[in-house]
Amino acid sequence: MSAGVLQITGLTKRYGGAVALDDVSLDIPRDCYVSLLGPSGSGKTVLLRVIAGFEEPDAGTIEFAGRPIVAAPVYNRGIGFVFQNFALFPHLSVEENVAFGLKNRAGATLGKSEIRDRVRAMIELVGLAGLEARGVHQISGGQRQRVALARTLVTEPPLVLLDEPLGALDANLRTRIRAELRMIRERLGVTFLHVTGSESEALAIGDRVIVLDRGRVVQFDDPDTLFERPASARVARFLNCYNLFGGAVAGASFQSDAGEFPLPRGPCPPRGFYGVRYDRIAVAPRAEKSGADQVSLTAAFVASEFTGPSLLSFFKLASGQIVEVETPLGDRAPPQYELGEAYALSWRRDGARVFA
Image 1: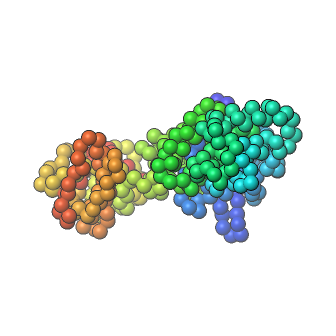
Image 2: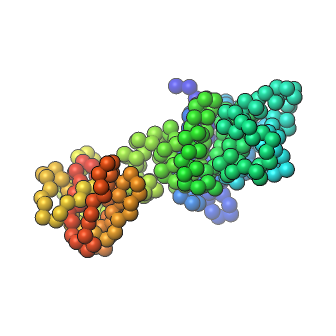
Image 3: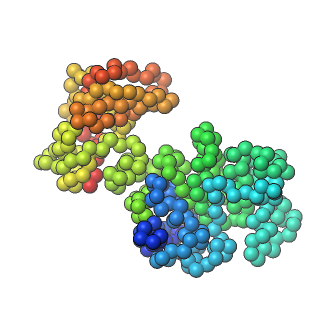
């Protein structure tokens, strides 16, 4: 297997006594969309800034396209960077903003006509044809995001770093732009490393997803593997789609404050968290009996949230813990539950996981 476009080994960054990056090692593939997911303060933006050269690491190495770059200046790394706030030049037009990097990069040898042709081609690729002469204050937020992306991509970097590029956009625009980002990346065959705090965005946009927690890489997988098999209870919690019950294994069961659950097949850690995904739980009247391979508990209905394609319902256990249930709707009407009424929540035994 050929080496990736970016290899990071033992990268550490401290600010006083606080460790922002803790021995991070990664091999970022070529021609790939990589999402970098983690909670606020996990070190996501710090990692991007160290790769770009805006920050110096305290330890570790970075190789980009086969050459070490820790000591290289920002302008000589050949890595593109798209800022969260776009960082456009307000006094320049769309075309002048996009052309800026080509005209001003070190060792630039392109003639005016070639620069113009490449800029116009890139503007067309990102869907801004016809807006070349407009000032950036005359276009929408989504269009400004495309200008920032075009300005970076026109210099043809093999790696582009995107620091929460959709964070300033509204929800509908975020969904549309992330589809466009994937399309543009695939056409150009470059690697995107995209920082986000949104688990749904990370899973939807990435071919691979890195999960960063307290400055450490805790999982690096394809979205399906990450969603189906989180590496830990903390990763499952970041994904915001698992109910977690703390407790310990006793014989063939997991004992928790919520009840005693039969263990899924396979090895399980002796202590930790029993996890079941929101969309794997079925709701039935309390009197109904569950099947032999089903796990069941009783909980009182609290509230529901209609999300469009699904219904998210909240049930309260006798222990006080809230259990969330996601019901896909399709063409059917949302189920109706009685406030305060007890229901049977059930799932397949092997649909659960036990995390250390």
